[in-house]
Length: 275
Image 1: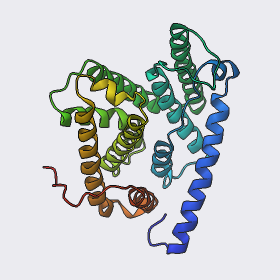
Image 2 (image 1 turned 90 degrees about the vertical axis):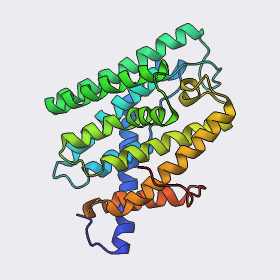
Image 3 (image 1 turned 180 degrees about the horizontal axis):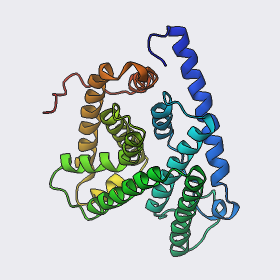
Image 4 (image 1 turned 45 degrees about the horizontal axis):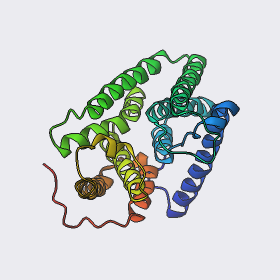
């Protein structure tokens, strides 16, 4: 438990968490390693904030370390499979050998299926059929939401934001619910939404084509930029207010979130509270 520990002990706890996350990343990379896929398609990115969310959720659960590792690796493989299926190669990548656009797309789909296969294999080893069911429901709901985004089935930017928030967080809120801990539900949603918006904003500045621009293709770049900035500030404001509401046993999450927010170059003192 992290409740009531000293400042020095918290620093050590954060350092240990970083080491554990690096270990998990290494395990994930080993699981995903496939020489043929790496030769022709972009190497999948491991989202460190999502990995930390899983680590924080399981941090206070009495469970063997190896089983925790399998839970986290399995869930991250699901996320990576979902992300891989979203990839559309429209630019040359100098780090991989060239293929036709159609061949690359087909191989990307197969890569996503490959990572899904690894997820099912690991879950079979754990024999946690309730988790299989929970993640399957999350995958179904995420894909349904992505279709609404793809076909622009939203009436406002706020509704669009809500859909993106759910797409980014459902896998992790379902996982948390599976282990009977819903105390971080809102925090997880806003944290992962913020991470998505900031990532896409950086990509847009570099002239790339993130998902958010594709989903908002009928809007001007200026309108999208203004929307993203507003949503980032509003999400930061909500997160700052929710920091003091995190349960004591999730102090590790609070410290990580505080550090995350302090590193952002945004000001939100004028953001009104949402009703």
